[in-house]
Image 1 (cartoon, each protein chain N blue to C red):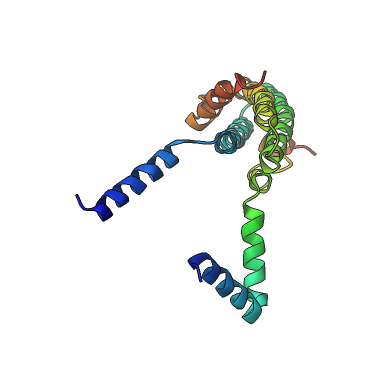
Image 2 (cartoon, rainbow over the protein chains, first blue to last red):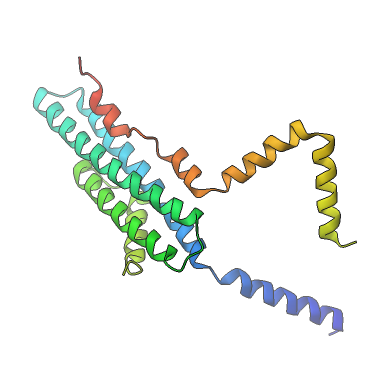
Length: 142
Length: 58
């Protein structure tokens, strides 16, 4: 092989290695976005249940409304936690940033689990993925 | 002149020529890079569940 080809191959190999290594900040950013999307979908699923119950009897409507309020309270808690995690990513720089993000995500996932329980419906895949993501990150919150 | 210097000079020139057009675009690009702004856009202050539970109330 000519020298130029060898150099190109060497640079390509280096860039591939560079692409493969993911930094803690990138992991944190992706996790925050994944959990935020999961929260949005879980909340919408819960809201749909209430809307569907509007056509049913009084007792079903009351039960659905109670569940919706539970979902809303959990959403408020999770939203604050996800936002705090996002702010931690934006101001990344300290050694404890990664831990902060992980701990905020753990709090957010607790709210997410409450919504899933309250909604009681078949959980959309994106919500399941968000919960799995949060569980993976929980190990970093120590 | 390096390629980076050339692009930087070109950008400065473009901003000088059309500041009204370019500045908002550049500012918006910088704002979009903040994760907190993206999350705020994704998650409204009032949840869909809260809004749904209010429906039908007098």
